[in-house]
Length: 374
Image (cartoon, rainbow, N blue to C red; front, side, top):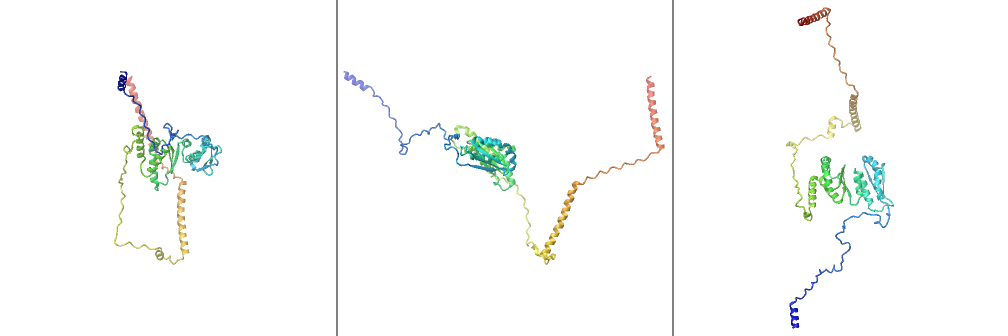
């Protein structure tokens, strides 16, 4: 019975489920021996640029001295003289020596024995280049930081017509500098328009955007179109849902329109059946005047005499014109006093008598009034 019960219980109890073995993904033959590296970590930012320190340069000082020089315009001389002490202080932490040559009109930067960063000399070169292009010291010094770059766009040779060049350069600046300020805010770059160059200071992405805007402006594409596009891109970047999508459907598409302008009226020349008469040659004119048979030396002498006579007349005229400035203005003619006819003694007596009579009449009138009151 025990065996039966035991067998029955064994039959009734369910066998325990064994845990299923995890199926490992099959690796390819190439990646069979590949192991995870310690730097394959999602938390590590591989694009981050660490500051270059003296410990990074295990070789110590540089072997050779490097130097760069740049010229500056004359109108920039006064500002550079005032600021040059600050320029030296700015370059001192990087152990870069700066020199200002006012005779040649140049700035030079060179490495020293203490310089440990091999790339800082290129940053210093960009720094003096920006100072020469009218960028202020505070904005130019930003180039020495890591992650900040600069570009000097030459716009002088983009257009042949000078008037058109000035108009498009002003279009880039905008009314009261509003367009330039909008570009600076959207690209986070400093932009300076000076003469035939545009200086840009900022991160690499912003510098590329500003360069594209400048070149398109001189190709007759208004900067406002790029400003609108950058504003839309900035709003889309803030939306995490659209971060991985294509933004072409959101960006505006500006079609270039052919605007009809007023055409200048061209006067049509009257065409005749017969061609115009042939103009006489120099030899024909000399034959008519009779000078053809006169020797050439004589003709040259006569022509020189005529030129001298004309020059004398023009010089006399100019002399007279110059003397007019020193001629005093004409005095105003005084008005002649009108002579009044002299009165005779008899007329004077009559006048005095009349005045005396009028005085008496007034006195009598006043006396009558006083008596009436009494």
